[in-house]
Length: 336
Image 1 (cartoon, helix red, strand yellow):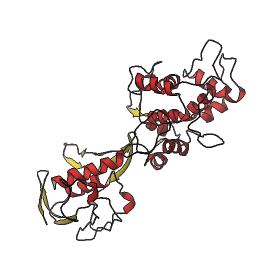
Image 2 (tube, rainbow, N blue to C red):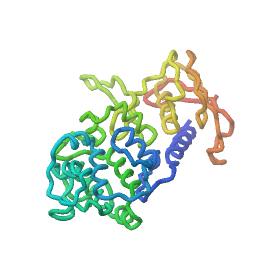
Image 3 (cartoon, one colour):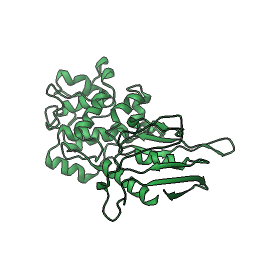
Image 4 (tube, one colour):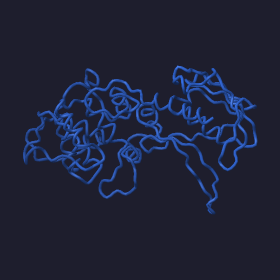
């Protein structure tokens, strides 16, 4: 059982770590590549791209960055509806309200007292300052957990492009929001949900295969601190996504509720909740079409032993594990 658990978790982690090609220097090492991150931001209404698509390999001017940043913060409608003053004389009309909104909210200060530098290409360092001001009461990203100096330096040496801006923007959603003394311990994504920019359901649909997922138990106690429930939950950017309730004999397990990252953890939770019943579980890798859990509690998987090394691999194509009751949080098992 222990070997199976270790191998199963390793297989899931390897699958999660397998990433697609990145566009730009910034690499978040997320499940979704740069194109997927851009699509996620687009689906959330935080990014629009160009008439030629997302154009992730293009550079970006400071005026264009002002539009991207305003949209990222869910403030485009507010910016376009208001009259925002700023001291800059080189801002084109199409960017005027975006720059004005950013200036009035302390998110940009221009390159001088009267120039915004609208036609200059924005650098990684400048864009990171914008994002730092968006979630912290700070004018510098240095010393923050959002980005490090070497990452910024290397990106500017390679040339900051829209793909890098997308990666940093996607990273911001998982970053803690602490601006204006906010101590609610919310992520930027949570704040945008609270502000009505998008719903938690819309966020889940957009981010599910793109941002990392955090699986854990949500322990719940009564007034006397007796444990009454410990639902298995998933969070993306600290936003609660799913509650994986206990598996009962009358409930089917749908194949689309499992994926390469969660199937192993879901199986562990299933095993840990077995009590007073005997369940035979057929161990596998590379989850195929999942069958319904019948009244006898049978779950079937398909093995692909090519994932495992010869030394640690499963000796047989399927191994039955007969699971006994849980006692003192220890699962007693024997090979079938």
